[in-house]
Image 1 (cartoon, rainbow, N blue to C red):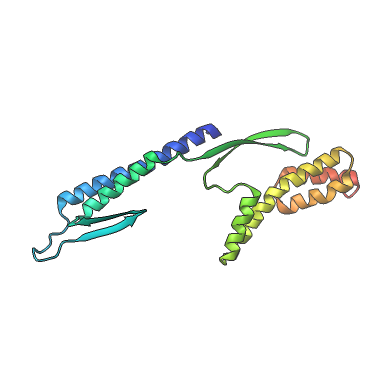
Image 2 (cartoon, rainbow, N blue to C red):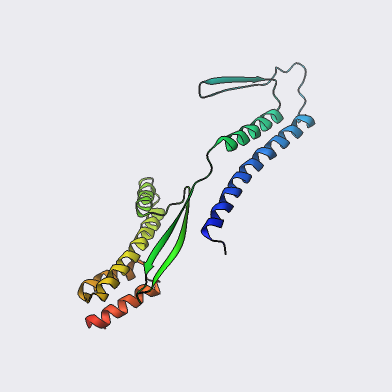
Length: 199
């Protein structure tokens, strides 16, 4: 299994090589299309013309074959990739406390475009709801609640260790509601209930 640093390097390589490969393939296909002469126009047919604007510049191509457009697209793609900033990724460590008091440290890797934080997930849910994607909004909100479950469980465990089980019980119950499949959360709830006399 790869560690987060290796994932980051692999991501950078695949991202760059993938886009450059797409540019090279476009250039090759454009060149072959140009050589093949996809279609032959009748001598009386007016020449083809392609024009456009990019930023403040205006350009016009006359009597252009489709192959030239492919090759130009590939060249622009490669130039944009080489001149652009590298893809971003951020490495961090997540520290959590299990119900047995065991501290674990996990490496996390966030890549550009990946939604991880609570605020980002809630914003995504709001956007989905606004455009009418109720199911996707519900999924995002459920994901946000699962993120809340771990701090609730950890705080419940700390209260339990401090002998404050009446305060720990509702937190632990909420953690289980938000993430019912987490065995560590169930263990915390069991221990809190035992001491609080609710078992």
